[in-house]
Length: 274
Image (tube, rainbow, N blue to C red; front, side, top):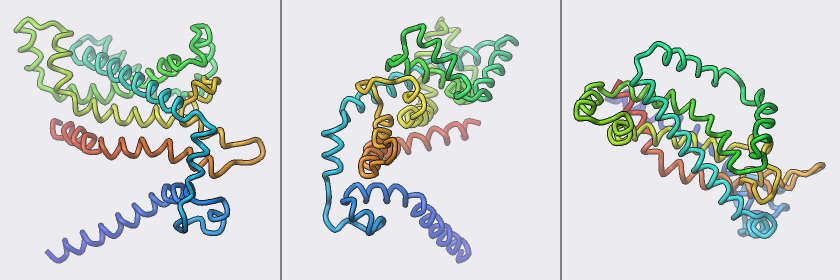
């Protein structure tokens, strides 16, 4: 009893130390956005003697934060919804089908994980230019829809744990494939949909490379692109850079904390079913 208690105490101490180490960069960024440049230079890790909010007011006056926030929300919401829809439909089709060709097709989708995204940028840019989707938020959504491959593999694994008798009973009652998918399968796989949706939301929200390559208009910039406005040719505006970083990170931190319970429940549900 005493030994297990000692282990829990040691584990708690180690986890607290690791949490402090991981949280140190975030603390450094947040604290220095509330200081003057002189205070940041004298004491980078110290608390501010007086709150300095001009970094935030300056950002909102010089950068179209609201427009960039709305752009990011639109792209993220539409892309994640499209990824979940395509991924769940593909997984449902693979689970229902018994043909060998579909299994080979599923194996071929693994190539999507092998080929680096950076190697496809030039042909992808050319294709989007022909479709007039370059410098377009809808073009970003089309690109992010390729993330449905990741959704497909996770959702398919979860779907295969659902008893086949449920689908067979629905077929006997006269339900068609779409009715089975919409009314039976989607409610049953809701935990994994939420879990995958959270992961994909954080990926799209924080992605920098894709909007940097395919977006050129300031009015269509995402929040992550606005962080780059602090980087000049010869110098970096560090107060602006850190302030924009906090503005980008805070919504995702809140979102992750709110959805953390659903992530754990989705992973645990899948583990228990297996």
